[in-house]
Structures are given as structure tokens and as C-alpha cells.
Image 1 (cartoon, rainbow, N blue to C red):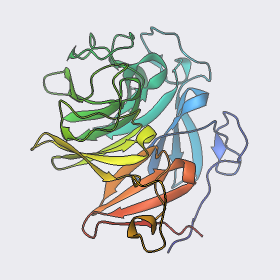
Image 2: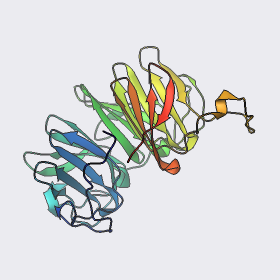
Image 3: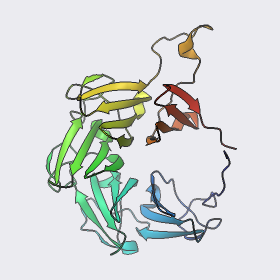
Image 4: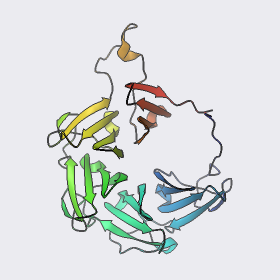
Length: 288
């Protein structure tokens, strides 16, 4: 219908549960849907929240509002301290959390209500290997696809994966803390710059390459990286130049694929953009 049916949150900063109008958040970043519930990474509250659409209620699942330490064993629900959860994804009643603040992926069990580290030893770097000894660097976007957990490791400008069968972390694109840029080509040579958002369909990964103001696509079958939506290279626009007909992206922070379309959080343009993968057309979502 093009209309917003409900607004969740009072608009004031805080960590308050309750009705949609009374509840408060503090710079929430990522969300994931689970039936009639929305799981929220409430980043600066250092909390995991739940929006219950059936009962119009907000509840804190994990986090006590205090930023957690560099190393933590986790704990029970609202007793545990989280550290800047940035994004979430759900698989089999397990919420995987991109815990940017302590360079780890955490997991929250919706049944046992326990939260604990799942990958990363807390040191900031790009080191592959067994999930708990691997080193991550500010994971920000996360997306579950079959038995793989894809995530963007923003400080190393990389895209990485956790194989849930082998429990191994591997790097798909990216080289290190000081290796960044905008280069397409073979996956082992391509460069990103501080990517924040990610999603996947089939054998393709879509990345919100934030500091390049672009949407990149990783073709896993061909092991190639290309720019799907990016800024024009020319510095001057001419009236008859079709490259100037559409507003360029400005540091997009997330991208989600749904039914042959990409929905893009075009953060610094304050817009939601839609990219039609069949028509190769970028439009703006009309929110009334």
C-alpha cells in the first residue's frame, strides 16, 4: 500500500520495553524477521530486542544496557553484557549476532535464552581457521544462507563466512586492516572499503560497500566481484547524460534481496532504494 502501518518506539533515546508507543531504543542497526516477531540489534543500548507484532510489545532478550568487556563467556538473557551488536540473522531458533564491539559473532538461543560467543577470539585481525580461534575485525553485517553464515568484517574491508558444518571461518574477499579500495575482478584480488551490509541468494552475495557508496556483487561460482550500483566516474553532469538521471548512492549501510529486487538502506541520502535485478533499474521507495 506504500503506507507505514505502525511505528515502534517513542523516538526518544532509552532502553525501555513495553508498548510500541512507550518503548525506547538507542541507534538500532540491524533486524531479522521471525514469523510475527522482529529481532533487533539495538546497537548503542548493547542489547538484543524483540518486537512482537501480534501483541504490539517490545521486550529485551539479551543485554543489560552496559557495554560488555573485551572477553566474555556470555550468560543468561538480560544479565549478560553485549558490546555494540550491529546486525542479526536467524537460523533454527538461533540468533547470530554481529558483535562489532568485541570483534566476534555471538549466538542467542531463543529457547534457552542464553547468549554466548560463537566465533572470534576477540583479537582484531583477519585470520581464518576454527571458528573460536579465528580473528575478526568489527563484524557489522550478517546473513544466514543454508549452512553458511556470511558476514562483513568492516575494519578489514572483507566478506567472510562461517561454515556451520565444518565450523571453519574463511575469507571470501579481503586482505587486511590496511587493504581497501574499489577494485573489481577475481575474488582474491578485489577490494572493498568498509562494507556494512550483506545478503545472499543462490550463489551470489550482495554487499553494501559503504565507503565506496556502492552495491557490490560476489559471484561465488565464478569467484568474481563486480559493481552492481556505484557512483559515476565523471565529475561533471551534462543534461543529456543518462548516468546523471538517477541519484547516486551515498554510503549505503545495508542491502537485502527479495523477489528479484534489492532493498538498499541509502543511509546518507536518507532514502530506501530499490534495485530491480531483472530490469537493472534503481528507484526510490515512496514512503507515505
